[in-house]
Length: 170
Image (cartoon, rainbow, N blue to C red):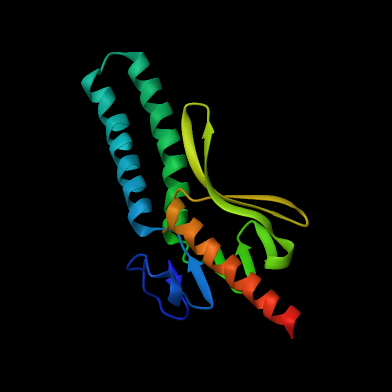
């Protein structure tokens, strides 16, 4: 997560009173490297399986399936690792994600970081409503977590409400 113009990725400052005018959230190197390590383990298993069962035809087909799936998934994780663009930008003026247009706070409603159960697995998402629909941005490989993002959203929404009330009283 980047705050302001610094490139610090050292973590979350729990004192929310001094958040800068904007926060940029990037892909987490730690999470993507962990995913690449898991992919490497599966690829190693896929390569070694035919060695363990040299005369079994099923081992070759199973190994081929595992290797192809691992390469596809691993290449997607590698693209995230190499992507140095911010995935979410939260600022005093609104929210920008890679999948939605620039939205000002007056056009956004229901913003939150939520856990969504999908079958046997669960995922964490930034969700909000905006004039063109409903945004649902995954948080799984990002350099933030659900609680941290919820707190940040509340601070920036509160700042916007304060700015609006000051403008209304002026």
